[in-house]
Amino acid sequence: MSTQTTTDATITTPVEREIHVERVFDAPRERVWAAYARIEQLVQWWGRGNRVDVERWEFRKGGHYRFVEHSEGETHGFEGRFREITPQERIVQTFEWDGMPGHVAIDDVSFIDLGDGRTKVVTVSQYHTPQERDGMLQSGMESGLNESYRALDALLAKG
Image (cartoon, rainbow, N blue to C red; front, side, top):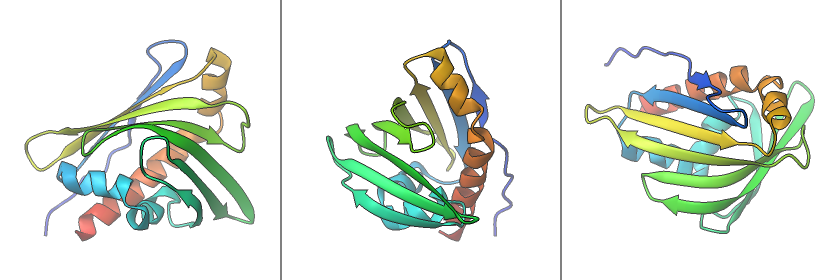
């Protein structure tokens, strides 16, 4: 049994319209990729234990996705389209949260094999304006993201 250290993601705003997120996972790149690419795994960590209804999942270039998370009597919808998928390396997609309708971000997610059984996931989210970026930061995104990543740690630890 391995000992796992859980840390929060590093979230920075190096330029006025972007959020950069970096997080290292104690699992090989193939397993981390599968947790993002296979819907039956994604729903186990995306909602941090909350029920997630998958209304659409078309994991291919041009494909559409939509999830609705249910928590504490509320629903939160998320959707977008896949722009680029390079297996085990990169996913580029649009991202829109129902809490900020019409404000679409472009997420570029890279999966970096650290060579020691760990994987760094780097997400660069680009917004149309600094105000949209700041709105996402003020929405509770950081705590929700870190809760999701802890759920992903637990899923990856199961094997």
